[in-house]
Image 1 (cartoon, rainbow, N blue to C red):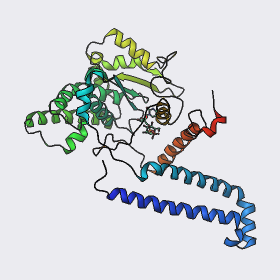
Image 2: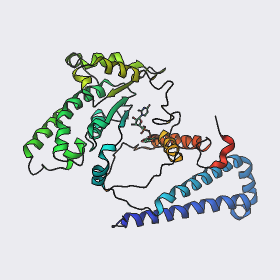
Image 3: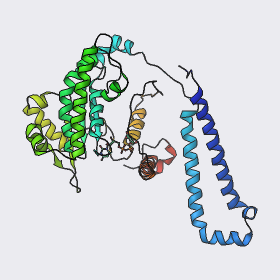
Length: 361
Ligand SMILES: O=c1ccn([C@@H]2O[C@H](COP(=O)(O)OP(=O)(O)O[C@H]3O[C@H](CO)[C@@H](O)[C@H](O)[C@H]3O)[C@@H](O)[C@H]2O)c(=O)[nH]1
């Protein structure tokens, strides 16, 4: 399916063309400096510059050449995208019985950057996916070990008993409660249910917000919810900074209702980070570890195994995330990505096989 509006598409081409022009100008300027210095500066001044700043200039040139090549390569996917659409009903009708089991991991690490209410909205929306419920397992990992996020999860586990049936009944397309209530009007035959579920959501949100504002869980709340006792026994010191890592399986209500012994044992195993020892985790199963851009390296290895990918950009956004909004975190993020990409380029997963001499293991 082609983009019918076209406007954004054209402007992104114009943007790409102007960036290319700027890039070529920078490269031209650097070439002139290197090869015809007299063209730019008087020789005395130029000698002075070469002697004092030669290495800095060479470093700058290398960075600009790398940035430019990297930018040109990334345009390939943006220049002429093909817009596709899916036929979900055909998938359900033809293949519902063969649909595979799916594990979904929601990861969080910092309750300030990723507020607990947002994390719970994410968990609730993936739990309400239009997918056979017995085939979906949702896990929440909290590397920050935040008791506020855990409290939010406890409240979310009560709210989901109303929210998921509601989503199924009214075929809710935005199963993230925050997104749904920010735009939706009551369904024609369900205004009472809509008002009641909205009230439950608001109540949950306010309770989470008030503990967030207080900055912690009071002793009274801890005693009210004995899940905290179990959670504290699962949490284990994670590294030298004594972070706690917590995995909680979200859509297994036995965890909250019956405290089944075997589930508890499995969760302890999961939280101890030893569950993947002597298994194919990280190789044949799950994400590849040990790289800052684990999704890129996992994607490459999936492709290497013969899977094909297609560009798909649905009109309604599939995911909304939190991106850095100021310079410092943006630079840190890009440094992490660049380091990860470079690591891949020099590894055996490199898409450029001419880098073969750097192959490890
Ligand atoms: O110790 C940590 C650090 C991060 N996270 C979570 O991991 C996700 C991504 O972290 P973020 O800080 O957003 O890292 P980015 O590098 O910006 O993540 C982007 O880039 C990654 C590498 O390409 C992708 O895996 C991510 O999906 C994508 O959001 C977030 O949910 C974090 O809460 C953890 O669970 N534990």
